Image 1 (cartoon, rainbow, N blue to C red):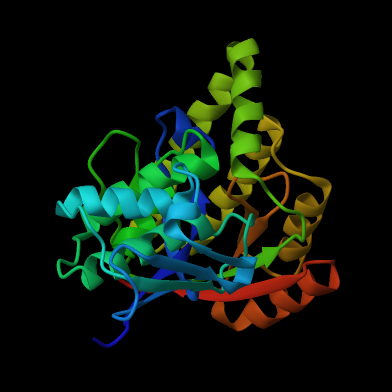
Image 2: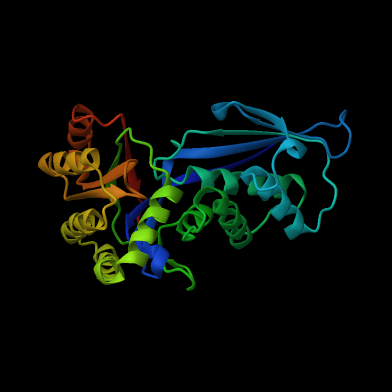
Length: 315
């Protein structure tokens, strides 16, 4: 049996991070320039049920039965087996690789879960639909984030830009005009679960201060949707700037992120903001295609450790 391969892209949040955890809408898009890959090979010479797990990027070389029950990879296997009604696994080797930076707000955990779900279900003879893959990735994301919003698994599983509101039907965004983003890694690790928990604690202590900010972010995401649908990139850029200001008020930015946002704007970006949990990780800049290289160069000169230029296509 030939090896089975499956892939999943990274993701970036355009607007609405943090507020999305509290029922406000957010917009996110896949990033095709980085991706996770899962490869499964049958091992007919090994006993039934022997599953070897290799993830060279993080130095993981183990077996499925040696993983803790709540480990994300073990969770994916368990969820896929339950979905397909499979009690016994054939012998196999799963190899996971990824070009998505870890703890940078690009959805590395969800992408790995999606890729593994796709590869495993195909290997077992019944490839899962996007809805099931997304649900499995959401369950697995609990390991990383504790209380995930659901946006990462959704945009990565469906591989489309989405307007996402927790607990409501998924809405795929139609954009009549492609737009270009420069993504810059600040070099500071951003631990989503830790940042989300810290903000939740502050909100519980002082809801009168924080809830109006979350509501403003929700209103902004609705305006950003209209800007995308009307191909109004200057307005979208202005809204990204406003979103960054609101995230600063939530206390989830950092000196490095603020610097990179300012540098991007000075280099000609239409708008810029942190993206993801904040307190490190990535920022994004909406740019005219001809300005992408200049903005990326300025960000690297200001201390960004890496940049990715991605285009969200027309749809």
